[in-house]
Image (cartoon, rainbow, N blue to C red; front, top):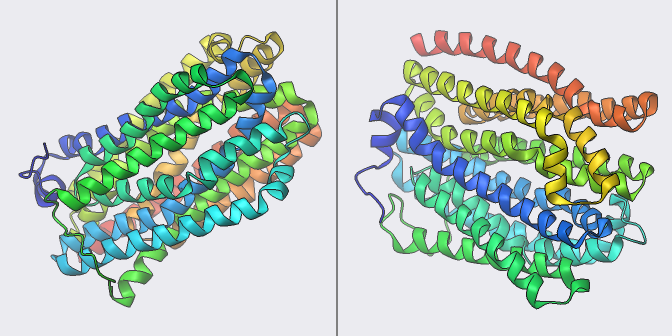
Length: 455
């Protein structure tokens, strides 16, 4: 049952800052961790078959799947930042028009993306490094999860961001968690019902069904429940300034996510030079290391509407408390994660697959990449705050600086100089430098903001 009394004004302006962070961020964090579990579920259940080629084929699709999240950010983050600012300025009718515009735009983009992937899938898979042993598995998973599942996946992402923008964090969290939880249930069920050689198809089908149900639930809440903004079934006519504001924040967010995915693609492509076992090992690591990342993403998703609202109201004191408390939470989780990964790396990799060679390489890879967890959070935390401020240009610069100027070159250089393990260490090296630059810029921005708010 939705608690109507906790409307956006209550949560964004009146609730004690730490409580508001927990109210908005906790459902997003839980849902992101469940999403992590269902992403791990595919790898885990395939790993029980003990076929590294299946694991490697599915791992190749992770960057492509993440592109659907980038397309969701294009609309969801852009609208999710603008709507709370409009609520802060009491522009409710325009906020409703922006809501409908974002949903229609997401539908068009997701459908076009799915059609394009279907037409170009062979070329794409070869570019990703799919070989004779992994091509068919990669295509099966791509077809089910992204070609057929692109629309419900992107729409669910957009809906969740838009619902958080009107303080419906709990309902957004339930919708995202519902898809992840059902996937964990459907994976073993379909693997049991279908033949072993169709294992990749089975886990892909489980993901597709789960995302459709998640999308249906979120649409039902938005259409049937008494949310603050009404979903009007007519073509919206938002103001040009509103459309520009959506893209000003949405495009940098999408580009940043795409650069993240390109980084994974480069890592995968370079790792293919070291064989399928190394590919399977890094594929497992890229999923196993995502706990602090998913926690941080959920935390940032929760606080962005809060910060955007405070920024529009010029409430510097409340905004700084929200930023400080949230950052402390993310840093603490990052430090704990590093310790756990360093101590339990072999056990973590063995949880997914029992192949001795994959376990040995995977454990070494995980220990090498673990220290990057803290600095990754510090980087994208600052980017999310700039998005909440509406400063998409600065957010875009930080994303390009982190990936195109630091991470990408570092992967090629360290791979060339130190080989396979140099490639694995590139993430940590680049993110340390990126975090230092990001926080220097952010501290300067905060000081300027204090002067602006004082006027």
